[in-house]
Length: 87
Image 1 (cartoon, rainbow, N blue to C red):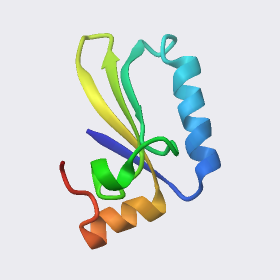
Image 2 (tube, rainbow, N blue to C red):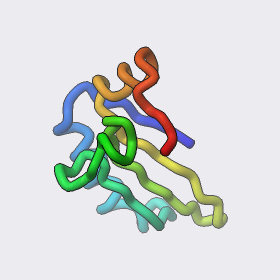
Image 3 (cartoon, one colour):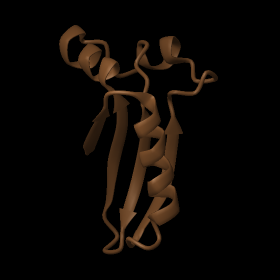
Image 4 (cartoon, rainbow, N blue to C red):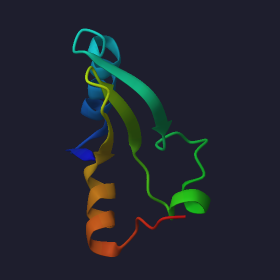
């Protein structure tokens, strides 16, 4: 699992767009995506208020990893306030 922390949302969105545009060129395939930043995501009910973008990415060798794109405020809450609880 990997995490990239962003200070603001525009670079997070740009990173997501870059992954989407270049994945095939890099030998990657996004096999699952969860947009937990979306207003339609029930963050309180499903993740204790935690929000991020979660991607499962398959590499050319078949390995799949999880990549989380997260805003600094959510990272801080998760790290210091135990805000990220499994459901």
